[in-house]
Image (cartoon, rainbow, N blue to C red; front, top):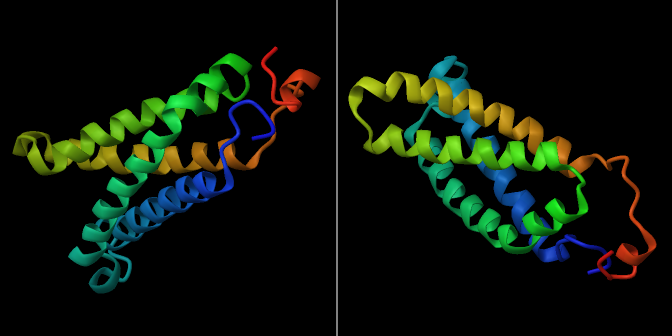
Length: 148
């Protein structure tokens, strides 16, 4: 690794592809089931099952990032807002996802709404976090692999 908190290429690809897969399948199901767009295709239970499986894989991928990426990001003070926002949104997604299957029936409609609103917002923040370089420059010691 050339700088503090940078993931190896295989891990970066794993995290990004798993979150993209989870977000795309979730959006497909949302469009089909909630908005009745191509409901027979997009709102099918198979899409929901794939979304659940990709959510498990994305959770594993994100768990592989937490031990070093989160600590390094905190220490470098870069992308704090988007990073910690994602972490909070992930907690909400995991809790509401659990409520969809294991929670009381009275909370189901609220859990569905909160889950898909949170999921869309998470995906937006994730894309911003991954794609944009932020203004704080990397110091010379960080670029050489050292810690300031």
